[in-house]
Image (cartoon, rainbow, N blue to C red; front, side, top):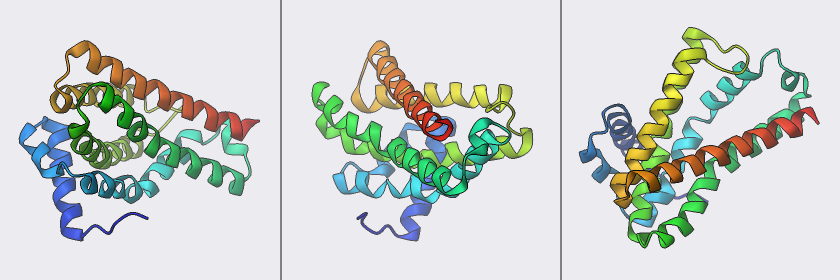
Length: 192
């Protein structure tokens, strides 16, 4: 079970996450903490934006073959895929941080990574509401957001783990392709 997080902590970490994601203000990294308890509490962030994520998923899948799946199996599959999405990278990073010989950086990285899911999801929701979602994408605004997310995560990995660009790009590419794999499995389960 996740340890409780106060409303004040949610507000402070969410503000830091928006500032970090939008401007990469490195001073904000200090606000995420470097204790394992900070990393564990950060898993509240994806839980807080779960309703928005589900709405985006429904918008994305509207009119597709996935949309024709029965509601209960679809809901179970979507929630399972979301849970996998939330935990696969933090679990992988436990080993990767050790391989990088930077285990002390893990907690701050995961905390910042998870809390920045809030601005990413809020922005994606706004784009979906304004531009709509056709053919499973948000068009050029969605591509621009994805590009910004990838650049942001490269900078985050570089800064926290003190990596060169190539290693940081490889890490983010690994995260991206694992995410695509989870998405493909989700779709495969729903369409049979």
